[in-house]
Length: 448
Ligand SMILES: C=C(O[C@@H]1C=C(C(=O)O)C=C[C@H]1O)C(=O)O
Image (cartoon, rainbow, N blue to C red; front, top):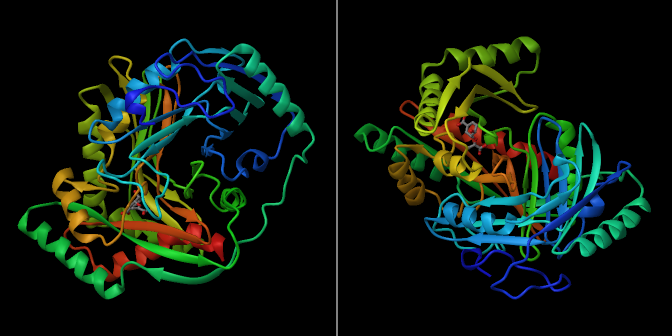
């Protein structure tokens, strides 16, 4: 069902209300001993989600209590309207951290149509899972969501018993092995693409554009996505981790370093993350790379465009505070980062902020429309949900979104990876090529 035409889509074994009379969601929570998250997200052919933040919140969900889907240029508004209907009258019996949330995201651009490798991915799609396990500072909670209190309670008890029987920890395994890789963009084609973008920059059509590549990886064994994410956690402990698995089609997953936005009440946090250099072999070499990035006029210009665009987007809504630049060090790469916070004048839904910010020039360009045209004229693959907002929102309109980077979409025995880099005046095609290869590594290393 298209969420634009109604709120809930209920799967067969829930108590389906008449289509035009969605009943309110009811949820109940119970504290758990720690459990293996895989038990929730291993289920194939079931809708499943995983969301983990650098701050330590981890959530897994399975099944569909409500689904919100939208297409077209007003997809953000449509999801928000569907969210209001979905969450109207919600009653939650449990701690705030374990409340029902809608998890999902958007495609990079609003003309997106689902198709390989993005089968199962609409232009905007969220689910409120029927079963959630939340691990936070205050403990681990199991939440069941249904349309009636008895059904929620029954589901809660059934899953509590089921999870209690499983071992708490499951091995995260090893990579599925890479049989072969196929590029959408050869290095020669890339050089031409970057040079064509540089011409547009010269002519003044654009100031910056982020061009990307995709890499299709044929696997030796089927991939265990939750296991892969668990291994990514060890390598990239300060990154987000996400898995979005519709009940049919591919599974989108990744470990992005970049927050698009988080909102709690009137407090907003976002950041500019743009400018990239490799890690060094020694602490001295590491610092030298970081120094070189900080001192580069080109990187500062590229980064400054992102800070400026975020400030311009938030200024009409909030009082904005831009902090000092720092270096964001990840296992394989370092970035220039500027943390940005804001205080909203009036409370807003997090989706309003997502719409205002996406795509920032960290993944799109300046000016946005001409940059998008450049991307469309240039890239030989479908961005799908790559570099797009991935996250959650709740009944109050609070939520958090990452940028879907360092990511791939898995289907059958293939994972398609995506990575890009910002092109500004003075960009060198060979350097940008190297940067893109570095950004494939987080996922690619875990597949080997
Ligand atoms: C586009 C990507 O990364 C983005 C682009 C960056 C850059 O151009 O320096 C840095 C971080 C991200 O905002 C990607 O990882 O695919």
